[in-house]
Length: 272
Ligand SMILES: NC(=O)c1ccc[n+]([C@@H]2O[C@H](COP(=O)([O-])OP(=O)(O)OC[C@H]3O[C@@H](n4cnc5c(N)ncnc54)[C@H](O)[C@@H]3O)[C@@H](O)[C@H]2O)c1
Image (tube, rainbow, N blue to C red):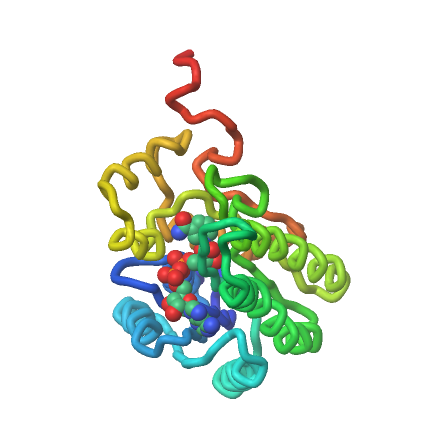
């Protein structure tokens, strides 16, 4: 049976995982492929993206890899050219990149502000710069950018550059959506909430206290009682890329187990 994305070409930027296990980008690449897309998987880390390719190939699906830095214009142009050389079109651009930084304006070193803005925002500007003309020539395409519910609200601790960047991703996406709405191109954000990915566990070694308690707390904070997984984010991305979302553009879709709907913790909520 044909998948929901049968024979479409999906360029996934940041398709590896930062550590062992399944991140949002890796899960999305795998799910696009399960739905019939041919995946062009890009990552700065060749080993990480090779792992994604192998998982896709082991399921009998198609993936080509490319190593490149999504914050550097020449590198992004080269990845788009390589995708076109491999497949001749780009139907889905999935911008997964995102790093985190904790701290407010006084604590945060300037170079770390610049680095995060480059990785989380400039990478999307560059990929759109080179992919949108391809999609416009095709008269069709979908851009899906990974934002965060941090685009909307304070996380409970200072994280000024991350929240600023995710807010920028939302506005960037909406601008692209409006400019290209009559050219057959849709652009949307996914806003993950608390997702249990390798990225989160990179903080374990630096955390001085009981890391398992932090993980339990993250689960407990979510109204549905659990953190999400990479699959939850990937399923939303597949929906937005599919024809089921043909009339949806310019939106930011929370995938957060209800987290953005509350401002108390579930423990503080009444029982009934
Ligand atoms: N895990 C959460 O709780 C959570 C919550 C909200 C939003 N998000 C968002 O999800 C996205 C990340 O998800 P993930 O789990 O796939 O993360 P990840 O860090 O596991 O994977 C990101 C991949 O991008 C690659 N990468 C980093 N810099 C690059 C560059 N300059 N060029 C090319 N590739 C580069 C990394 O090597 C890595 O393989 C981010 O946008 C993040 O902000 C995550």
